[in-house]
Length: 149
Ligand code: IDP
Ligand code: MG
Image (cartoon, rainbow, N blue to C red):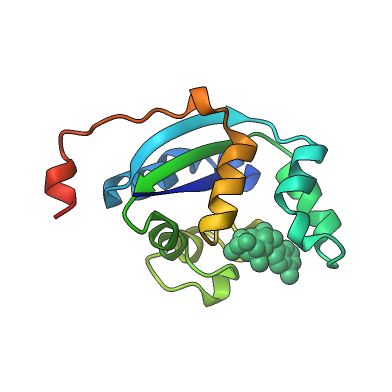
């Protein structure tokens, strides 16, 4: 089973889309093992987005992600990383496939509502960046056998 980090970004929180976004990921069958509302400070934002440091959009990205509360969650499932990325849609909402969160609710790359880890190493790094071990719950779900073969 893989674990991946999702951030419901400030624009999604401000627009009242927390429930909609959690619902889409939850009903897909992914299991929630961590979930909280928080405000990202500048230091955390810089660590999370360190790979983008130096790019023209970096200062705006840090302002955006720290501008209002976010909801962070850890989702678990087979191939959870790729499944989440595909459920979110392409980074640029204009290029996102219809039916994805970014295509259905967003227009611009700088207000694209959600973050999902992009690979196993980043997922492990990001989960540890946002959650203490004690905040992550390993639980057995009675419906797992109806979701996983
Ligand atoms: P991802 O979120 O789909 O992994 P990345 O390329 O890793 O996309 O970029 C991280 C975030 O930085 C994007 O989700 C978006 O919020 C922001 N971003 C990326 N490119 C641009 C841009 O050209 N203008 C403004 N913001 C951008
Ligand atoms: Mg990325």
